[in-house]
Image (cartoon, rainbow, N blue to C red; front, side, top):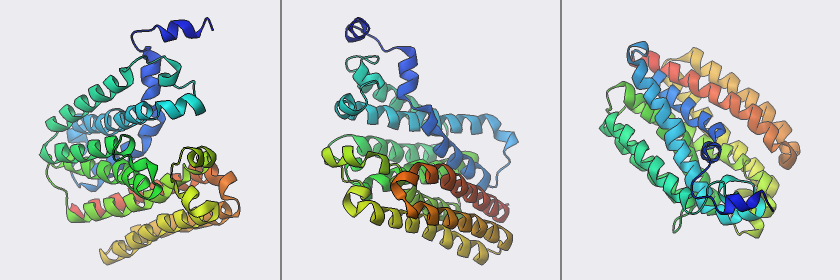
Length: 301
């Protein structure tokens, strides 16, 4: 009790809690997708290194960080039951500071995006709308696995990829091939997001969160996510062949075959192996993203 009283009376957030609520471990996917956009743009990278660094900060610590703070603020009542040690329910971020941090981080993100160019700013506005709509009422996309996972996939992969390309070409709209790849890998990421839902089936059921494992059952959701991950990559392979990039197409094909092997083992026990598949399968998946980015870079150059 003595430990919690100072937290209950605290007026300002603890610095360590502010970092924790930004969830740095979640920054990697959008920063990687942003890097794919940088590579795919065809623009010289070293000549614009400061712009690249600014964009990585925008994609990870700012935009993704904003989505994490917003999510924790609007999930604070659920977290108070399931994870009371988190920064907001524990009182390490007191009062309405979770909301204030969400607004501050949103403003800083959009300010940097504005500096990086009109298309970057426009993409950031879309991403920010998704970040708030994912967690906040009345939309709260995360309440339904179909919409929530799609929103997260588009935000974490597609928008970050397009932003990376736009930054490198002076804030303009990237080539259509880049847009197509970003869309396809965003759709595949829908399946990746479903993997995160297997660990919270009981809590989601109790709180009426309609994740795909809740709606379709463990087996049905597992089969669907494998299909959703694989099909867009198959389309990418076909496009790379059509764009006369056979070596890159074969490389992505090998990446997909590795995932299929992992999927077979995952489907044997989806609930127990979801975290295992997330660690291995997703790493292979994003490798294919970078291979595809280099293929498009060669075409644009």
